[in-house]
Image (tube, rainbow, N blue to C red; front, side):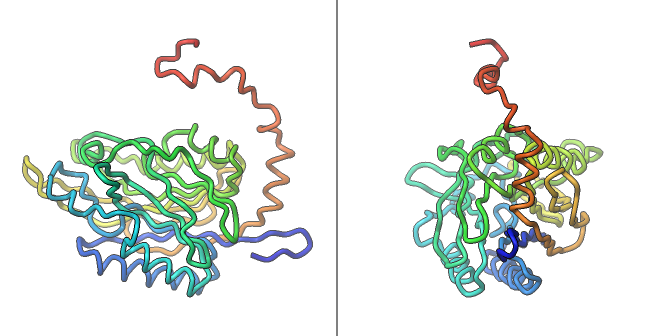
Length: 300
């Protein structure tokens, strides 16, 4: 990150690749792409959600709980800490977390010196055909988090969180300068004609524009088949990873089939001034938003 003439520049990156169901193969793949992103100048590099294996939530299977590991001494986190330290980059790392009797869909943020800056546990847990996450994950208890990295203050939420504008607004209110969303989303097993990819992008573009911050989304690609209690279930993950600018504009984007390394440079000071001058935070009325604390819209 350069600081010349009032500039504060940072290069954000999103990775996109197909997963196998072998941890070593996937982590090797992620490391190779992180190194390539670094070679392109990236400072903060986002890897997709639960990249150690297949997206196992297509099925409700007891044996898949064996994939969960505690945060402490987690082999993939330790490896990414070494990689971040070597390259001088920030890497959010998604993993299936075991915490005593609880299980979470979690991310740790590793700073450019290899330090673990903290943990975010996914707040919103979906439950539908092909995405049966409530069987595996408890709702996160960390609250929304902002991490002060070497290059920027970043907000980070996970997949289903991305559909909730409250999460994005909360992170920016807490000081986030860039939002990051690791994701695993694709086709719907119950409806082969349903393609949510453009809806998915537009919602996050709205978060960027409404909060006047850049946003980075990383999604996987490829077809994954999981054996369920009712037979095989299949999802084709639709990629479309992207980097959006502070008005929601798409600045770099992947397609739905190919591996990709996206990079884009932002001047955070310039964006900060735009955010201040636009007035959307100046003119907020928190006293009128109490209805957001309810589920049914009743006044409290």
